[in-house]
Image (cartoon, rainbow, N blue to C red; front, top):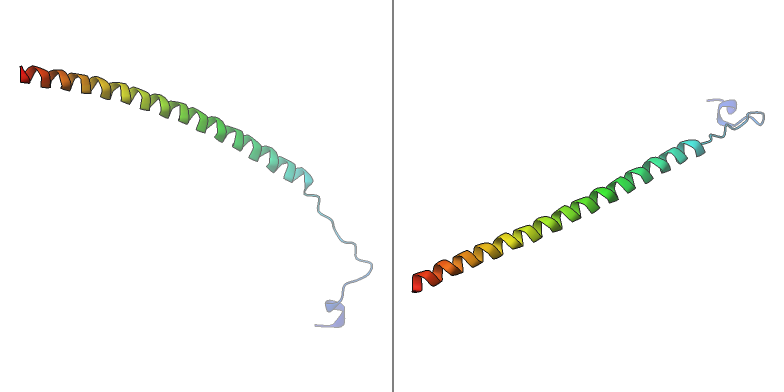
Length: 75
């Protein structure tokens, strides 16, 4: 390696990369993904709560039927 290889030229211009448009695009995509995930989780939470309420109602009906059967046996 010679000295010319090890030193930078003073006449050489540095190339500045402009990442701003690409970063703004990434920000937009991440915001869209985030809002979509929030909507998905909200819908899932609502469906989960509805399913739990329905399951509770079914279990209450089963308990009532079992109780009636037990009363009928005692008589």
